[in-house]
Image (tube, rainbow, N blue to C red; front, side, top):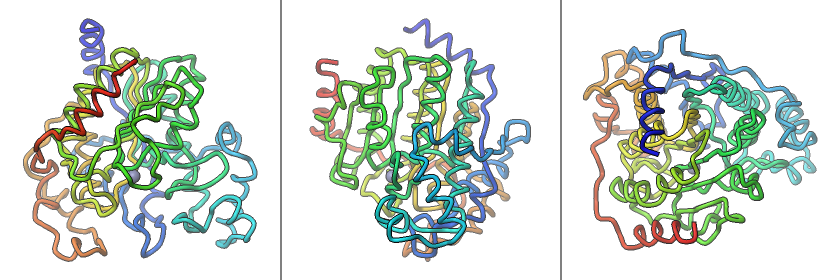
Length: 381
Ligand SMILES: [Zn+2]
């Protein structure tokens, strides 16, 4: 294994990482009061460009997926309903009830069909780009709650599932999916419930929506869940990675790793009560980079535009072995200063949201429930 990691390590140093983006994220919003009213992907892209980290030759415009590509997983009636909702900007009672569009926090918005189809097209492009090995970052992806026939948790389509299916289509048969979003990666786990080719690992806040992903839930053996308590810190993340997640990934010997790198487990995120700094996300990226010849990294949740964009820009730097400087460039600072954030914290943003990309580390005690989670995951593995 050590030999293999050394090989992948040198392999990755010579490979270019690709960044998949789209201008659709700049103008699209879920609506004024929705947590996804904030710009995230476009801010990340602007920030990476302003730092000088995103030359044109590694930026790939996400194409829209075709209906045929997404009906591999999603029901054709559901895709047709999304198309109808975009065209009419309204939804029938029947479509709302059946597909949860315009319900449960899944609003009707201007790009309700094109935006998720762009997310899906982006991940399919990402899977193709790393067919022979490599790294692709797709910050618009990571919609891990999407179901075959309904919207869930602000997710309309499930791009991680579509991306993993594309990797399986390439003939790969050991794919590790690691989800560090604050919410359980339920849609992905359920999609591969019976598939021995896909190992799904999810670290998420205990007791938070969708309230699935208990430690005992192993989905037929190919899932491990780490429901962590409020206040989960960087030290605890490192403990789970070193004592459970990474040993499991090494044992599985994945041909590809899919990292759902949601940014809502950061301390300053309004939708969770976890307390990570973005150093935790950077460390997870560094750890998975040397463990498989193919790496797909997506975004996911994240509802504070400052902390999301700083985190994902730092992730992109890490994927490119770029050292993260202690201060943002003036142009990058201007990108961050240009944001508006209609929450209490946004009225008086702290200076480090503009001036730095890396957070101060949030180390702490490793609580007994964390050591117990790590130990339990390895039992009978
Ligand atoms: Zn989330």
